[in-house]
Length: 107
Image 1: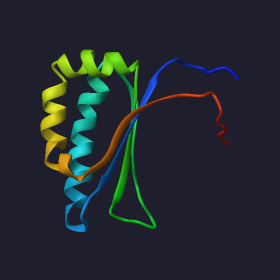
Image 2: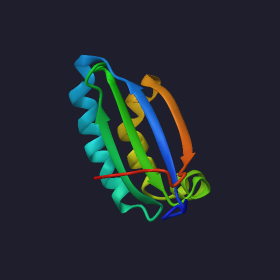
Image 3: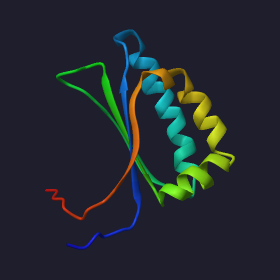
Image 4: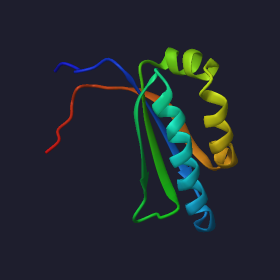
């Protein structure tokens, strides 16, 4: 199995109360502009739980873990991004980096 691109995926799992769903989604829509402007971010996605509607998962594809931690976090895009998502920081259940295995399929 070969991995098509060497990058890191950050997974952030949130538990957001129902009365904050709209604010959370709006914050990430705005924060996403900073991710799009970053040379270290290759893409992101925000998904919303069906069975557990207070759960959201954000996946961010970074050029590498080191470039996320050192590059993005010291870039001009970081503080505007962080200020938008900071109100939801205490709602994070998991925030970790993962490497791709190359084992996947899409239709």
